[in-house]
Image (tube, rainbow, N blue to C red):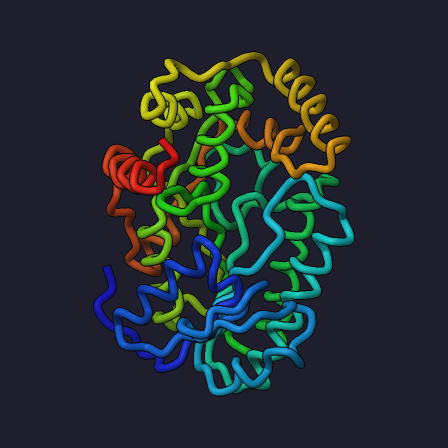
Length: 326
């Protein structure tokens, strides 16, 4: 865990989200002033409300910050392509421009391992070629990375891209809160008979990796995968939540059957005008059976996960019970 930072003022987009809030708290602990942008304001944390595509609404807040961390994104498989592109790609460009004009020394972009979703190579690393697939989330994450790499190559601002794996822990919407809610309602299912690989990383380990990447000059211009060191199956990972809820074991089935059921569920929710993560995209993600490599982060950042799955789930269960979700 880092004990000091060279940055005095840090600006974080998505500052009230799961990752953004954790980063803000850690930088404040180290004595840095944190500011941020989100869809709602939180004056006590220096967070203003605004749209990533409209820097005129928050330019004054980013000015003078020496580090900008861009976590804001549309994070769902079930989204219109235009909406995902506007936030994940155009928004990224607008934040880059504002960071450069505001005098920032470094720009850290939170992408996603989703950019590598359809890579089948086991132990894949950052050199693996990515492929657009038609999935709006996957495709706009790839395009967002291209925007950042282009800005770095043009000498606009030193940039680093982080591809987090499956980040869980207190406050995680996709991998803690939503699964627990869906399990309680009997709506949770796993493709690939539960044998898809889940690359779990606890939130504290991700925060430490992001901060190391921001501090080290060798990380400038680089992409880093940050994932759990020990791969586990989806059945084993989500089984922790089933045990917390006293629900037995996860319901599993073949991938084609899971996709068919999830697509029906998605259409029902769509007709009811309610958001859902059910659908083909989620099932394809949970059916992957390849691992990824943290070797580059080990080598260049000196980063190693410190919280294993058992300890991470113990902390997560504590939080879920305190929040009344169990």
